[in-house]
Image (cartoon, rainbow, N blue to C red):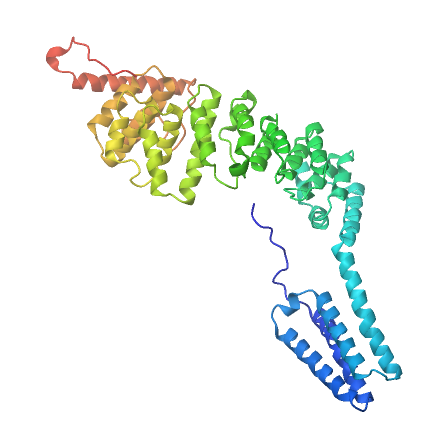
Length: 480
């Protein structure tokens, strides 16, 4: 995951904060200066040296660019303790009321700063603020109509920053009856890394029991950074959730770190690819890292299976390769894709998707590869793709036209419509399709008319090629 950006990192301190810091740092030097004026004898020189030292340190701090960004507490403790030491060395036997006051100030102030620092580091102020924010969310009445919009409330952002140490205040809101409160609390826990024992299990139980998809989405996202196999496998089961939004959130929460998690996820991913509930989802998409070689190998094997599993595995691999090409189109990656495309033993669905990806690249599909794809042993969509690419590079290519004529006579209306689109665009034959629009539905009258026209065109072209003396001889056609 990307590193969180902390707002205000480059904001310049205000004049009040600068003045307060300068006063706190200059106070020991001021006390030593006044003590030096009030003291005579051998200790006077020691106090003047201490004053000079304090001023030099303050001067270096004021000219340092990082000095104003550093916490004030450690600097105060250091300067005041050193100042107290100079004062004790310079006035070991003095009985002046000002010296006693100065020693008290130089002793009490660092003790207070140290106590405040320890209190802050203990997390108690943040925990108190988190509880106040949680109580405010629980008592809120004005909620957005859309549950998803509850995740973007300013109170949620403030609660997320307040629970960076302990998630207990947010977890307490998960038992609230309003789903809006639960979504807000879970949004504050989104992709949390530091969980105390049994806290992540509480979030998982909320996800499993929630009826609202928005609550399940937020709970799954909250568990995106856990590093426990049992929890990851449980979250992966939401890849088959009835809600598309939850399935999408589960993919984001689990697959972003496939390098370490794939062994835990592969069975859940395989089941989700073949689940009829997810049939309309297409490719399994996610952000973060690209799929590992192990995941690609599994998906390649699954793409050879029949049915929904093979289709969705091929689409997922196509999405992976498309992303890899956009990020770093290395020659080795293109060569591997070309190898799989030309391999007739590779899964047909994967070859078709790879062909569509490489079709848009520059010189990724050369003439020898395209001519090999024209052969009748290849799937019809690949032959159509190769014919269109050859016609684009060489208008009127005879081999490509012959393949189009053969595809037009196949008893498949979907292939016939796709072929008609290529013939109309590349050969200029009017087949009744609207240019620039998607083909009509296969069950429509327009699709039937386009299919009839493309078959008439193919038959007429075949009749023109047939020798006149052999008009009664049937031409042998290649297998579909």
